Image (tube, rainbow, N blue to C red; front, side, top):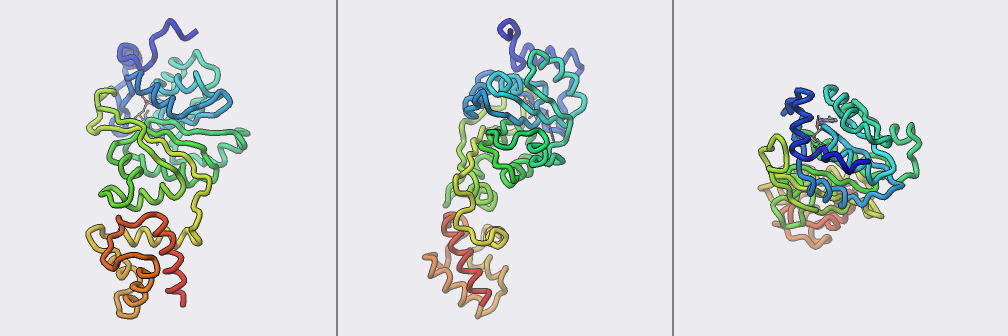
Length: 296
Ligand code: SAM
């Protein structure tokens, strides 16, 4: 059924669709359409979607990734904010009966409610998307912190953000975003994608990131709110030492300094350490010790 048509991502077909519907990619909505079949196939491979699994796509654009997902998943739910693209998608995806296109801003969608309303509880759901880059972080954090445990997220994003969320301790990119993500998900960069794989060409290079839910999310964190506060405070001023950042948080006086020094010693952390040198495990231990010490 699909053999005789060019894929939507084929540059000839993408340009034809854009001409037919007089489409001009909207920069304000981060519209950069993928025109590399190889990249799309790699994204779908990375998702390892199975025929009984559900895909949620954010920002289907003109449907290049959507059609590939529909070829492997049981069903695809695709959220697109731009109402001008809805009739285009109905046309380009008309060959598939397992796709629902939903005209909504993904940041307004209550995904937990969506899953319940569509009887998807218990299903393996994966989110696969070439994200609109202007809202990569809020979209990703919503997905990670959602009550529904999405099994995997395969997300194309700007390379620089990808490096931050996959960073290891000791690297420049390691920071509060890294830790916020890696306490719940295992992360890796699947591949880097150059600017020429899109119409129009974006200004930055991109990367496909695979995020897989950890079996024991947030294990070892006794109070998540407190842990998050510690992380925010520890990285508040990246040039300063961890001690200085924590003094700013807890109050700069001799008593606090002495208590902090004791916690540092107990956690095996040097007095002059910087936040980016600590592993997530060290931050977890530190959060528990700090909370106990400062409650006294
Ligand atoms: N998936 C297509 C592809 O790979 O060619 C298009 C990807 S394009 C980078 C991002 C898409 O997200 C655009 O279609 C844009 O209109 C859509 N979008 C932007 N902001 C959105 C939002 N808040 N909610 C849902 N879709 C959004």
